[in-house]
Length: 387
Ligand code: ASP
Ligand code: MG
Image (cartoon, rainbow, N blue to C red; front, side, top):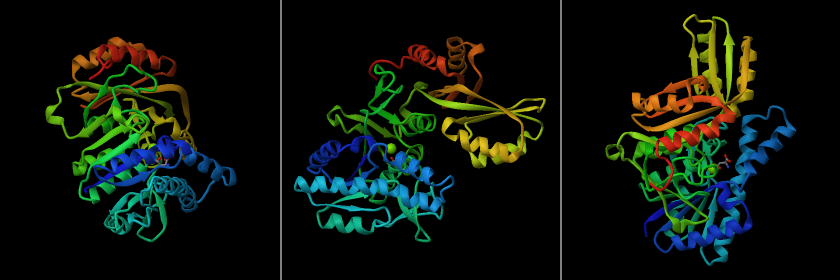
């Protein structure tokens, strides 16, 4: 039987009941392919481990942080294997390092260099179901590393590619990719099929459905994958693949994310920008023509790091914490008609920043207006109802 990679996110394995339900699901899939399972840590485990680290130390060494965080996935891989055994399946759990997920020498956000598949090939030959801990590997200098938050998606995609581009199913808590966050907008349109590029833009602009690095890796190797719900897999999901040539121009999705705006005074803006971009994930920046201000937007999660970096640089700045970034994503979205629609729906006076490319137009608006802005744009661009 051909292998298939099945990845289960934290919400899918959040409780013992969920773990047993996932084991049942794997058993059903095992009738049609040979599962290679990838799991995330249960529910909020990774956040709890991080809090624990910061309650012990203000500045935990990156190596020790990775040692701690990899524990989350070890818990779920062992428990899921036990649940599979209960159903009469031969499952065997492995850490990232045991299966030879080799990463660069860097803690907390290591890139995967190679997958040796060590124990996986043997397990498959023996008819066993390998259950692999996501989000982790071992560096070229034999240190335990993590791949960055949400990195289990990356483990799954990388494994599916290494196994010879086998089918890859990403199980989450929503049945596929929607034009708007279905948790906030239940009437959002769902896609049966979607292009890598659109999903990658969505993922890097706040959509929680999948990690953007994982989408980019799949695109690079052209590995189509399915996103579906572990709660209701029978509903089907979204097939993500290369379909650029099939897509007509237009808006496909809207994402939102809370941001912080930094307004930096002075003429040193540009050299300072280089330091900021290195230390922090900067979403957008602009420098006014007279050169007296540099305005930067960063996701709220980067707030502390941005504050630290700016104070190390010793510059004066003001910040606004009540903004959200709304991104309109699709094909050819910087076309004048689409821009005009965005301006007329949102209103110039409510737009704090705007940035655009051919596949994404982002604006910053007051967070309290975010819901209305998304509603109105979604209606204008026909993002409700089924696709
Ligand atoms: N458990 C890790 C995290 O919460 C990795 C993952 O869920 O993909 O970031
Ligand atoms: Mg996740």
